[in-house]
Amino acid sequence: YMKRRIKLIIILMLNVFMLFASSQKKQDKTPQINEQLNSLLSSIALEKDSNQYYMKAANAILLGLECEKQDAVHHAYVAQNKGRLVSLRTKLLSKLQDTTLSFATRKYITNVIIESASSSLFKPNQDNLGAIFYNAASHFYSNKKYKDADFYVDKSLLFKDWAEKSAELKVLCMKEQIETPTDSTVYLLALLNLHTTNPNNSLFFHLIIEYLSQPQYAAELEQFTSEELLRDPKNVKVLSLWGEIMMSKKKWNEAIEAFTSAEKLGGSSIHLLYNIGISYSSKAFEYRDNIKEMGKRLTQEQQRQVRDDLSLARKNLELVREKDPEYKEVDWRNPLYVVLYALKDKVALKSLVKIMPTEK
Image (cartoon, rainbow, N blue to C red; front, top):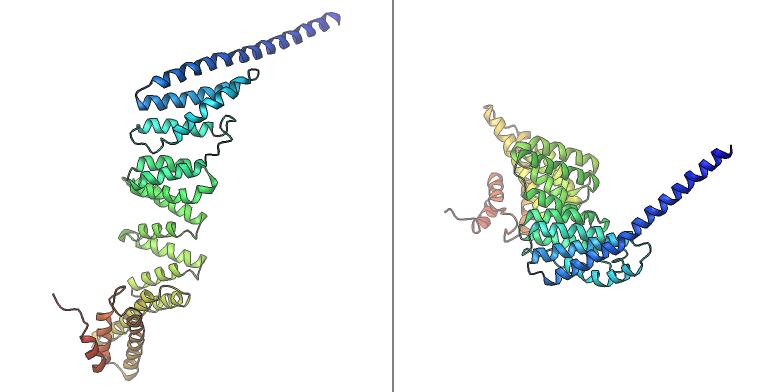
């Protein structure tokens, strides 16, 4: 029993010794790291090449971080490094948009800035990195440097306060960099996911509609709009879009219903009233022409129906005329002329002829 106890004590002593030696070895690294930092700082002062200067500055900060991790005994190193590295990091922050530096250099110093953000060496300096990265991304996007913009917007996405604005800029960068069908699909999926997360974001909605408005995606556009109507049946933009889809399919009653609902909910009245007018007139003329194509004459009831629809078309187009007399938003002159001609209103036609567009 005594032998086993002595053996156990020896093992425990060895473990304590090894832990002490390991700790001592770790502590001994600090002066060595700090010496490397001193040497690097001296070489920075003599550096002429700007890329090398900022790469070395970034490496100096990394050494400062390593020194901070190791510095359990020599606390003086942290205080010393804080004084001389803060200004270097500020210089790095000022160079994120500097295109005289290579993209590789800016990428490297950006990653060092992020890595050092939580360090006690720099904590008192609240950088607002989200804003800094977003502004850099916005700057490069405006200058059509989409690779740079994409890199910085990925960084600003990490910051909650900048997440939505960054997501908007991210998809705009993706749009500009589409080269393959795969890029195109990834872009649309990103938009749909973002729209699901934030259905009230007008940019995401607009970009989805823009993408699906390509002729080959007509069915997908109709499906998307139908689903949006189920989700939010009082959404003016969706109702307006649904009306346009119904117009393209010559479903005049559905188009009129959608446009009228959108107009009642406060949509842009000039365009909606115009579309309502066009839908009523198209409905009337199509109905009339279909009967004539069958070699039949319109009954009195059918004539009344055509006339009622044309009267409603006239009413809406004349409201457009009142709101947009100079026809700057929509050119209502020809559609109104056709309706007045069909209604045989010679007095109104005579007044309208004066402002009709001249044949070129």
